[in-house]
Image 1 (spheres, rainbow, N blue to C red):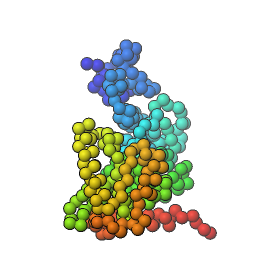
Image 2: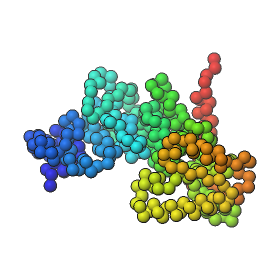
Image 3: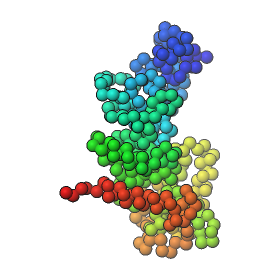
Image 4: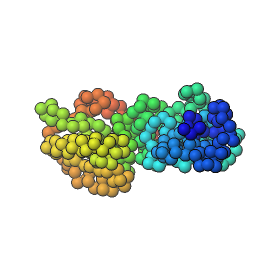
Length: 351
């Protein structure tokens, strides 16, 4: 077994010394090819590292940054990865870290990217014995710098996990007033909804917003007039009589399902769609690729939307979060008020 397999992957000089190994052994193993240099003064067992998916590699690099960097805090998408939040398809080239003061030189580093940004004490919490940024700071930092579809997925994931509230995100947005890219967070705050279940649903919501479509209600239970549950859709537009379903194989593979599980879920999808159509609902389906582009999704939605809204639809709708009718859902009402509040706050000021 490789001598260094028991060390954190990746590892550095302090990890080697703590394990009572010799730095000279690291150099010999690197020369022999059993250990790889993955960053400046940072190593990993080659076989283990090459078998690790790229986002898991980034998460491990972020853990190493927490362990080895004392004057900066892991931040942005790197901290989102440590929090287990949804992430873009490809990780950043380097771990993002925000400096804890304004005195350090922003020296180049092969695996860490140092950023400046004021960190008041209330933006820091201690987790596992080390300082970390509060999740609301990470969400808004991501909203300023990432593609909006990825930033929305992170915001939705943080709300879903109970790491943040809408109010805490608004407070952080206000703190960062005037920071580069902060206005990009406005639409993220407007759309954020913790009921979305994965990256694809969040990315789809962003794409629909970009094409001017109304905001769909995530994860709605659809019941026929006899009280039988027909299915739960990924999104519903009750006024237009349209349900939205992120499509098939790619969706489930993104969620990590096995091939056998995917086949079963596809059968369930077909049965559910037939039930929705029988109730008079229009059904719009899309793949991850179509969600990113948005043009085809927009066209399908417009074709499926009823001119007379939900008239003629023989169904009742209830929210998955509370099982109550949408008209009685406290989450729906709070989101309506939230978006109204943000619309007023972000409106251009006329003096």
